[in-house]
Each structure stands twice: as structure tokens, then as C-alpha cells.
Image 1 (tube, helix red, strand yellow):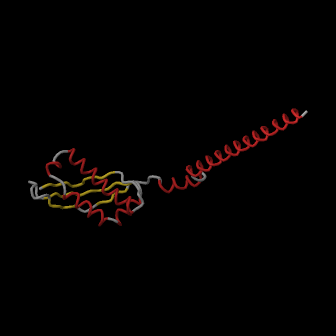
Image 2: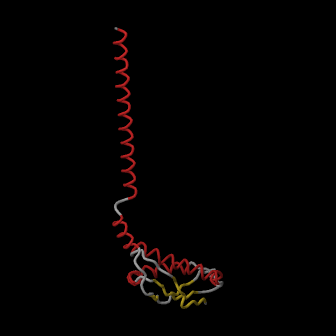
Image 3: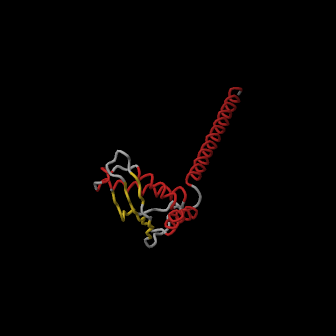
Length: 167
């Protein structure tokens, strides 16, 4: 009988140990699931209404076109350049009235940046259509940087040269 008493005790101890292991495994799984859900919620953000409000603020609807005209820029080219000066007049196209207002407000800064940009040009590069297109791209980038840094970050659609003289 003594042997019988030891057998049930031995069977009870492993059963209790395996129940403890099972509980620890379940708790561990629940913790992992909870942490995963928490991290996912944190990465994805709040509810969808907040995201919709942000999208509306960042991407307003396009309006009628607005053209902002800049007085002519006249700059001296480098001393080694066979052409003495460059005169350029531009119009900026945007479909956002807030961007047009910001262009008017920041015209002195835009004019300064463009004057420096125009003064760096080489007349040989500007004789070709590709050279003018490259300058047009640089002008657009320069103006867009001002709007991004000091304004709403709205979009400038295009830049048009309305006068372009090298002499």
C-alpha cells in the first residue's frame, strides 16, 4: 500500500506543475497580444476622423488659377561671361489663393533668392531651350522652398518667363 500512496502523490505533483506551466504560457501569450495591440494602435494613430481632418487641412481643394507677377529682375552676370546682364520677368501660377497671398507677403525674400540665383547663371547655358527649362525648374524650387518654410506649404503649379533678355 505504501507503493500505492506514493504513486498518487507523484501523479498530483506533476499535474500541479503542468497547470502552473500552462497558466504561465497563457499569461505570456496574453501579454504578447496586448503589447502587439498597443504598439499597433500607437503606430496607426487615433480614429479615422482625426486623419480626415488632417488631410483636409493639408490638401485644400484647388481654386481658380492665380498669377502673381514679379517686376523684372536685372542682374549682372559673371565677369568672365561675354554677356553683361540678364533681365528676367516671371509670373507664378498657383491654384491656391493662400499661396498667392503668401507670395505677395514674402516677395522681398523671393526676389532676394531669385536675384542671387539669376546672378549665378552662365549665358551659354541660357541660350538653349534646355538651359531655360532648367532655370525655370530652379526658380520654381526656390519659390516653393519659401512657401514651404514661411508659408502654408501650398503648391506652386508653374513658373512662366514673360520677359527674358540677355545683353
